[in-house]
Amino acid sequence: MRTLLFLLSMTIATLISAQEDVSNFGNLQVHSGASMSVFGAVTNTSTGVLLNQGGIFIRGNVSNSQASMAAGSGTLYLNGSLSQTISGTEAFNTFHLQTNNAAGILLNNNISVSGTHNFTAGMITTSITPNYLVYESGSNYTGDNDSRHVNGWVKKRGTTNFVFPVGNGSVERTIAIGSLSANSEFNVRYLPFTPFINQLQVPIRNVDEFEYWAINRVSGGTAAITMNWDFNKIYFPNWIVPDIRVAGYNGSLWVNNGGTASGTASTTGTITSASTSTFNLFTFGTTSYVVPLTLIGVNAYRQNDHTLVTWTTADEYNMNRFVAERSDDNTRFYPIAEVAARNTRNLENYQCRDYKPIDGIAYYRIRCIDNTGNEKLSRVIAVTDGRAAQLALLTNPVKDRIVLVASHELAGLFEYRLSTTHGQLLKQGKLSIQVNGPYELTLDQTVKPGTYFLHVYNSKSSFTFKILKE
Image (cartoon, rainbow, N blue to C red; front, side):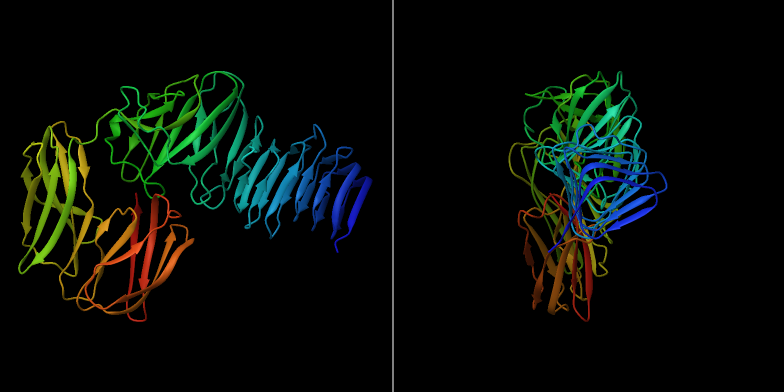
């Protein structure tokens, strides 16, 4: 059984190490140059006074009930090997903070940083109460990335520009606030699956449905919002970049918050809004309509000396042409045929032929272009030459299933692993290939929209695919 070390009064000028839980009911001070290491939990009671001018290393849970705790000038090190929880009735205030726990830290209480926060290892998750990781005026942080950020709420006080280190626990999706007109306090959280996507105010025609940020202003004036997209982390629509805007939800409609975007829709980009005094939900919007047609299906078949590419549309309006494109590596596509649009409200069937030989696998897609230059890309279709032992994705992006097609020469028992871009395993199993396919791997609701890797392998062959989940 773990024992408790009760502190009524202690001043630490050198080094102290405690194997037990520590509860402070009196005056506990750690002087500059000194440190205290606790392998158990630390409880600072309502009668306790804790002042850290040196270093406090804690491997267990932390609870604080001291009102108006002084931040001091020292560093709090949360360096446990098991998940740590911050709790209590009053915020735990520290000057510097280092979070170094690969198992993660849960905030059931606010923790406030006045100096520098060093993300070293592990995720910080805030409760839904909510509780906050608080950055006071003049504070900063370093070391954040996809595996080290805040999955939940971050609070910032002050007058300076700030980038919020928020994400979903798998990828970091920062957002910045700048050009503040007054001393301000903002609460920010990142969230998936944008709500109210059909509640739009002109000139906003569409909003990004896969991600958004909640920004609540507690106090202050106007500010500008800077957002970024990263297609490899979270799917981003194939929008025309000059038409992208910051869209803000005003409680009933997604409205235009302005901005000039830079970057490429298929990779990365940024946009900064106009100065605004209204804060609620924010995501990306576009002022252009989607390409005016319904693309029902795309297929490709190898027939003797050529590949037949077919596609079907409906409700064409103001369309200009279709460009059939091919890739030999599923990365670099080039045009093989161009077909004029018919612009009818009927079902329209199109086709073209590709007489270039296939060396293993070829990939095909259709680029749909309207009369204003807007574009829409179809899914990618894979075709094998039927000779080499190959495995290919039949379509990409995917929705509720991954469909693979194998050449005649590929057979045997394979294992597969579906993982995030950071290596987190989501799904695994066995796949028996006896004929050329197709083979389906169903995706449940735990596989959210984003980018994943599928690895299919046995002792003789190995295939890796980059999967885009819509």
